[in-house]
Length: 217
Image 1 (tube, rainbow, N blue to C red):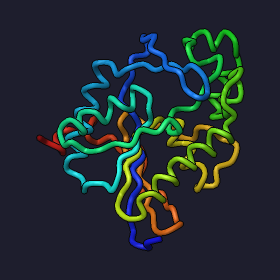
Image 2: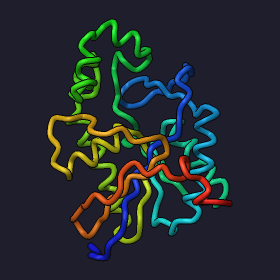
Image 3: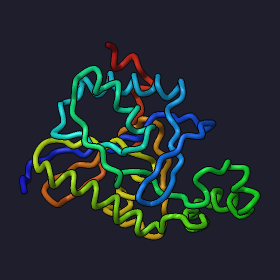
Image 4: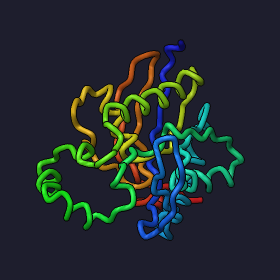
């Protein structure tokens, strides 16, 4: 394996339409699969402008869920880039939580506000939800597999907030915490990769949304 430094960019999807009833069948069950809303489409366009100015990656991997596919679509349409779509990069499967509004979850789990206040884990509360350790294992396997398939050059992974947390928590040694930060939509979260070594470089970078004048057409 090459010891040349490269970067892994973990990119969260743009804002999704939470009112959508979209769904899809996965190997874990039927999951909510909303498309991007109007704000999300604007965010995806801003991301595409930024990505076009970055060094071309060795590969782009993407979750199969609509909100991730639609996030990378403007860049693909502008550049003709190839993308590998991988279901193992899909978001944590919430079981009985998949199609419920937050208000319903609060009624069923009155402890949620306190857990959020104290930054305590939540995933284990979901009936039939994907166990976090199993989720983290599949995310690590998918991301590390992408890096192994392309041993030189940068790799972009377009995915979800839970996926980003699961992968980063692994090499940061954060045990027992399913979410430790909230990545903004279309944020770029960067890991330096040198051989088998992983080092966190940058988190929650959404300057293309907050400061779009930095990345003009």
